[in-house]
Length: 285
Ligand SMILES: [Fe+2]
Image (cartoon, rainbow, N blue to C red; front, side, top):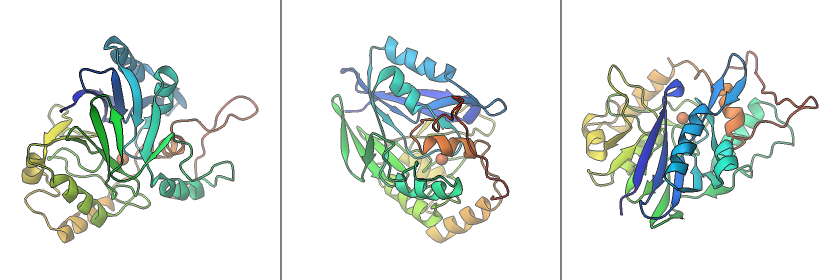
């Protein structure tokens, strides 16, 4: 059974959030929700999230799962806000402890931050399944962009996170801590081993002079992806990715995003004046 999929594009961060459901039962899953964030003022807000919430409520759906494909470096997750408003369990790949461990050191967190994934309601191992109405969510470990990336197979449709971008954009960087281009290549090959007509849903699109798109097929990726299409070898992919990654700047929101996203969307504990603070490591990167 194919799922029903509603996509929401968050223009400020080029991120797609998906609501997935079976069309008969009320249960739905939310994939990669976004919180609005104004870096200049340090203010989070939820105008975009509220539009998704309104759509879920208008369609009389119940939020069962809030699924992250990985700890994002380019936007702040709306997972906690959605959970507060609609319920549901927040889940992420079970290798998230690797990412938390790295950034616990970067931000010099003390014992108050435990890098074992306990901030999330559910840690997802490779190939485990979750129920979603008449559908099943199968978790696919797809590391490479980060060591904890997962994709979700829902009714044979794949939600690939940052494992792939649209064919004319290519693939995501692999130079974050624990990222690895050869590993990403293997993850991509696993996804492209699905039948040609399989629908792939991207987490982002960065459209080069065209409308933003969020879905394509395995066949389109195999034929046209500028980084892995037409049988690109692993060696050629790794060489391309490594030289390209060396030219990329840090994502604009990486420092605030990571600090909140490794906490499943919870802000750091408020200080005695009631305000939460983020850290800014100076001269580290
Ligand atoms: Fe990412």
